Image 1: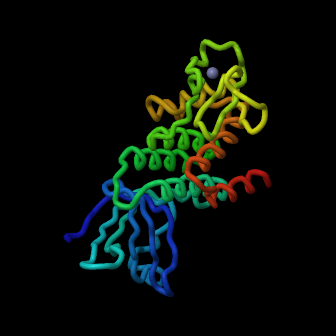
Image 2 (image 1 turned 30 degrees about the vertical axis):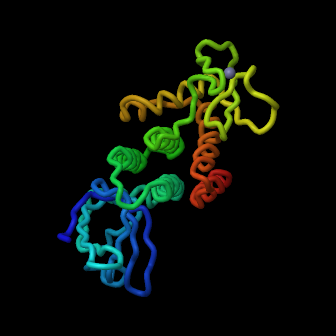
Image 3 (image 1 turned 120 degrees about the horizontal axis):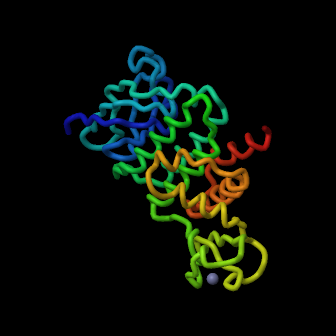
Length: 256
Ligand SMILES: [Zn+2]
């Protein structure tokens, strides 16, 4: 097969022996792809020190005949996103998002919308005055919507009554059923996350419409707190496991 060239965001890398790296990228043209980068550890010349997490690269790789990983041939920098890697909290947020992409997408299936979303979020996160919390909510809402797991936030998932037509101000979220339940429909009192009406609205604003406009929304502190708690439970629940990077992120926030 002739070499393939595509823009790609680096998700993770692990050392393979003393010289090589195994790198997983999320690429524009092919989606998730795992490549062998030979001599990447010792030879600074080979890839000029640009194989860093979250950097966006133009990569060229080739696939060997028969078995074995495809091999990274060339890489040139599109965006280094240095500020993210210099800040531990930003790194923790980016790692969580990268892990969601890594664990939830299949090798070799292109997802242009997810590539554009992650690239955009990283660009915003790299800005000196940005914080990760709102961007993480934006990412999770959009990621779930694109993946077909968007939580039901606009109407009761049992009786279908729209939130706008209800007087109650706080709603129970049922993780398993994937959305909110109105008071008459919920049974029992425990085991629910509560989201206020205002939070529901703000999360829905973030999930839909133009991405740049959604990124300019400033969440209220209540929406930020409720949204973070809810999504960081909802997303792992539907992913089927707890991302390691999420535990680290939560510990880091607790310490601050
Ligand atoms: Zn109901």
